[in-house]
View: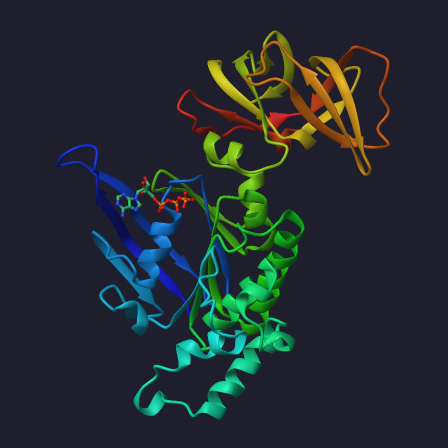
Length: 366
Ligand code: ATP
């Protein structure tokens, strides 16, 4: 099922200021194609949960419309929208077994949708198999691990065969190893069922690893929508560049003079841009190449070898936040004993931003 948002806005009264509002979701316009997994990604308070609650019907919009395929669902209550919800805290009934928890949403079906006990049981076993908890049907939630409880919650969300699956920070309560395992599980289940899924997270790595599309948000405003790799490779502004990537993008103060980009006093690369002062230069960690003829001269503080890659930790007077972290291939040759390192820079890993943080489009000549 396709999801379309048109001019969707949600304002909440601001408790601290009379007659003032917090705009949690500001004029959202986008389309989520059928069968895709999309991440709503942004820092705490940017409006992710509000956007999800508007889509499932738990919140009413201040303005705008929501369509599922061609049906306007804006004024439908949640139970008539055909969505399954999974929350961070699982929200399972502690006194019911896994089987009873999964069956619960089926018990109130009425009229021609009403199911017999056997039919309900059959459906519960079917989704339990899909999320691989069919061996745990008689246990109570308290007798399960966090990862297993989240699988029960996903099974319960899927048992009514919803058209859309909405997941609000579903991995937050799991430890690091289980987070990775469970996010891969969510991706597998989403692909196997072909369901359209919207996944809320503040964790860029999580969003990048399993989504078809990411929607990056800040203070209720969509910053960029695209395939994870495209957004990483081509961020539209400084906020997006900083938000995606571990280690994060390295930032420097720079200027352009006579078709050359300078970082501090160092000429780094030729460019087609006009002379400009006061720009921010972003270089991804994998964009640095140790090169004795390179223009960017840094003080080398430390080298961390991490299996496949080597991380060089260095400083530069024009860096906005030191240290600079550059990731280089483990077989790269460099002088380990030197206290300095010179880098040339990969043009595709270099971004320029103006004073307001907007991207300056440019061509670099390596
Ligand atoms: P988190 O990751 O911390 O859950 P979020 O990105 O999901 O954050 P929301 O919970 O959607 O953000 O909140 C967006 C903004 O709307 C915040 O400034 C929040 O304080 C405000 N807000 C959310 N719900 C209400 C409410 N019921 N009344 C007033 N303000 C609200």
